[in-house]
Amino acid sequence: MNDRRGALQEYLLRTQPRTVDRGRMVVVERELTRAMRGGVAGAVVEFGCYQGGMTAWMRAVLDALGVDPAVHAYDSFRGLPAVGRHDSAYLAEGEFTASVGDVLRLHERFGLRRPHVHAGLFAHTLPEQLPTRIAFAYVDGDRYESTMQCLRAVLPRLAPGAILVLDDYADPAASLPGRAVAQPKAPGVMKACEDVFGTPLAVTSVCEDPTWALGVYRHAVPPTVSAATVGPKTAR
Image 1 (cartoon, rainbow, N blue to C red):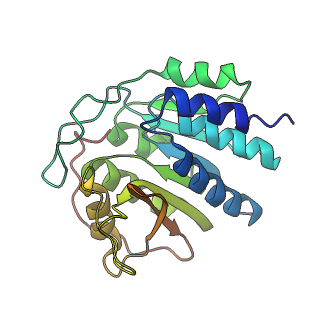
Image 2: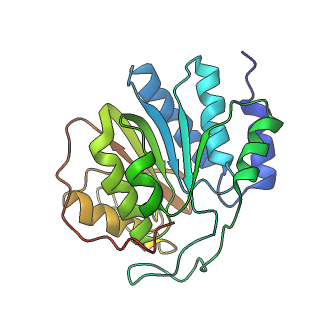
């Protein structure tokens, strides 16, 4: 099968630099490859897909590996929800508005198989439209409530050995060895992880860029999910 990663990467770096940069692609390819080569069975899912850049990158990686799990992408396509009390105002309400058509056209441009796109608030789509078994998940919720809803929905469905990657997890400039510090532009992401996983966190900070770090959770046994209440109206 034709390897589309080079052309796709060049295009994404030019057209979607805020959401899909070289470091993010390195981490996602590495962790997705780990899950697939480890024989983890299940779907590949993305929460907060925007214009589909990372969705397309994951499909290109899967094609290069010669595997074909279903890929599901979730977004309200209305942009970010209002800022909550655990969030920063750095990202404005309504930012990152896109459309289902944006996602599909990107895949068609590079000859990639279309993902299953689920449009709507997470509170409306995740309860009924999430695959029952998940091998890999990429969470780009930006806000506390959005990230919390994704975690609470996806964790019970992770297959043994599944990997979950969280965007905008930590600030490498402020973090110390063994102690990650929340990304100030999206502090709600780490706060949601703390409220779901408790401490010590099961999420590892992974840095491929001096300005941000992703969070990586490798699933072995079902974690204890807290009973924290999640507001259904604010999730992306």
